[in-house]
Length: 377
Image 1 (cartoon, rainbow, N blue to C red):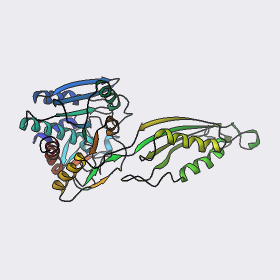
Image 2: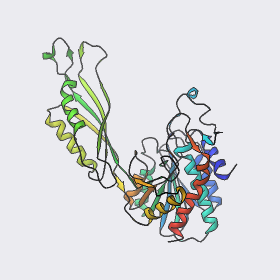
Image 3: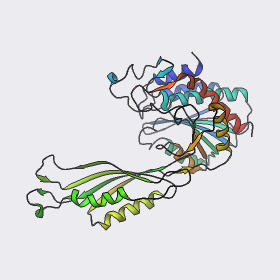
Image 4: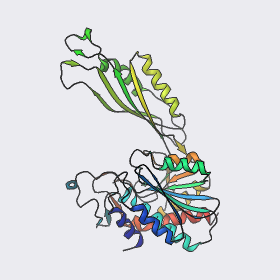
């Protein structure tokens, strides 16, 4: 097997379901230390984080990834065991194959090759890994980013290995992400018998006009490479299960994915103002998942475009679509961030896989970009 295939299979075989790392980072650190990297293990709560660097001073380029994976679901739904990597018809199957153990393995191989070729390279190259990207992202990169602030750790450029390609490796360059704001909204009413509505207060009836207004609102018209802000209700729950009882409480979960037109606190105020205007008795608990970030034209974006064009044969699409990534915690440190990774068609699905051809090319892609940023400046 090739180095990158062997390492990817080793990572897939480790059952690293969030926030469990299952020894992935220790194994990677041992490899990188042999290559001359300084490795620091940063554990917060149940989350493992690895910070590995080579070189000194600026500029500082980091590769950002995660060793945790989402649960595989029922074993019988998979063609083969999700934690036993299997190659079938030119595809490598296993949980995390695409999201994102292939990229993590390719990161390590690219870094080993880079420092072997340029032992006295300018600046600093590093890798930051966490085991809490697929979960609540509380004790992962946010905690490390706070540590970096306290230390005055400089980050100039960040390449995240999230699976971003659509149909072919390198056909998409992610240049930012939307912010995410979630809410747990509780509407209070008065429980009662459905035959005597005058003696109760139905929170569902009261909330529907407000929820309809929130859902129908056109929040903005978009921002540069960002789509318009979206509001989505993801869960509504009320009642005792009996059809003759007016519920005393309604709980609604909703989320806003927003562009740089907004900040989280502005959206919170707008939503609460609309709720209050309907005379609701309510309480809302907000969770700020991360502000939007955007990488404008500059060295990282230009050279990433150049490398991807060389690999795919056409200039990549550049957008800010998709969910979120841990780059949202690195960008506020002043870093320019892009996301480049394998095809994302099977991520979080049964029989997740990565193309063997793409896997073999990933280390060369990341190595080419590192060289462009630190050597051929």
